[in-house]
Length: 311
Image (cartoon, rainbow, N blue to C red; front, side, top):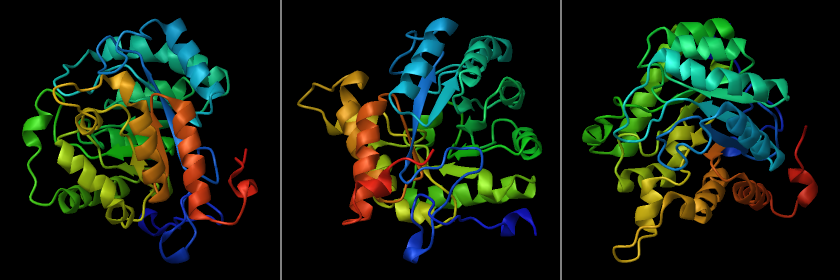
């Protein structure tokens, strides 16, 4: 059986599949009866929301442990900001930032992903205990990434990407953003499969905020079913992003990123109810409540025992 024909579903998996078919689980990630919650650990000085807060390895490790204690299923560690306009750091600096944190969190038993576009960083992080790779370029920034992930046989999150952070917003030009993002993700999926990546371990992310204007993000969220029709689990990363600030604007007053957590939880609930496999957030407790509510919403009358987490 080829990679492109491998079975995608497992009985009882989340999210529920279209037309009543079972949903999808990703080998290497926790199995739950609800959308997974991925907590963010930015080991950077310049991330848009919490840059500099966890630059020291010890504080980043403690933050990751706190995210897990509050219910995060996965902890995503990144050492390079991907906010609009951000410059690149050297590979050596990225490794220096992330490897101690990945080692510390993995040693504590957490499921860790490495947020990077560089295959050498991803490979080193996997060797340090990471369980998967979150690549905001979907493999486009480093052609060696797909082959490395195929060899490692780990979960791989491929994000929709049109170019580097420094100029990506100039690329936010679409006739139909959902159709175009879906087509571009389909092309990435086909390329990953051709490189030998196991279909069961590919998660697709529409890349909210990456070469997207606010209206583009809302269209993608409202038509999530079209992305799910590609047949892969879908991750939604809306946490604290600028389009939420725009939606919450009062006159000239735009709430800062840390004041957007309630809006993030609302998007998380709606995305989970629409079948998102995972949501990536800064503030875990509110979103964990949100996806639990979404799971109940999807199965009315079944009672809270249905959504009790499977360990």
